Image (cartoon, rainbow, N blue to C red; front, side, top):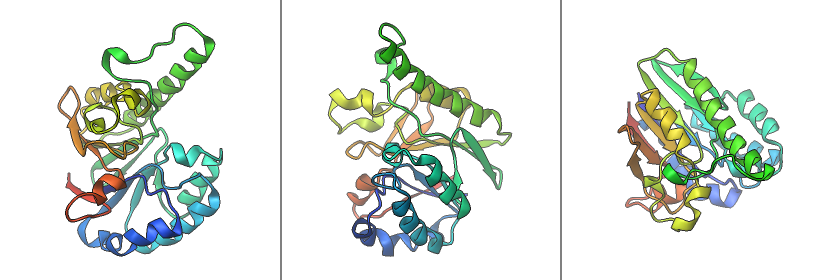
Amino acid sequence: MRIAATADIHFSPQSYDRIREPLAHVRDEADVLVIAGDLTNYGKPEEMHSLLNALVRLRIPIVAVLGNHDYESCQEQELMKLMNAEGIKVLDGSSYERDGIGFAGTKGFLGGFGRGVLTAFGEKEVKAFVQAGLDETLKLERALSMLRVPKIVIVTHYAPIPDTLQGEPPEIWPYLGSSRFSEVIDRHQAAIAFHGHAHHGKLAGKTTGGVHVYNVALSLLMAQDPPKPYRVFDI
């Protein structure tokens, strides 16, 4: 399977115009399009309506997770309904199988990496924050437990490893992802993982277990030579 992956579209008519023509060719190069979150800028249904009008014209199966921007207006459930109605497979602690490949995903959350992962100790606000990250981790575990396929693709918005954050200010790394998700990825021996969110990060890295992780934030992809709004992977 050929998978085209992108993230952080942050839809507006003006921003989409610059990727409309090159994105129209994705069907010629890939079998599935993965979007790793932040489809909209402010999480408003009208943004999603306009984006979906463009995406359905691509005529390619789409698998997606939401990102933090898609939660901004507290209408994420409405956004997911709109996406599902157009045939987009929205992963929110859920999975999807196609041609022997399993896709598992969730938005993810922040929290830090390695020995720096925030733990549930102290104020109730800290415990609630940590619990939000644990809940997202459990959602990914649940999604993976439903798959019975030889190859698994992980999709999150937040980064599961620090390698792909290089280029971002180190002081904000704990707010860009959490290594709790890389532990899940390794435990289930995923074939590949995609994320976005780190607009100024690095394109690729690996988990401790050696799983390839790719940052497919649109800003990074468009900074390559030649610029292209998606990257294609053979699975």
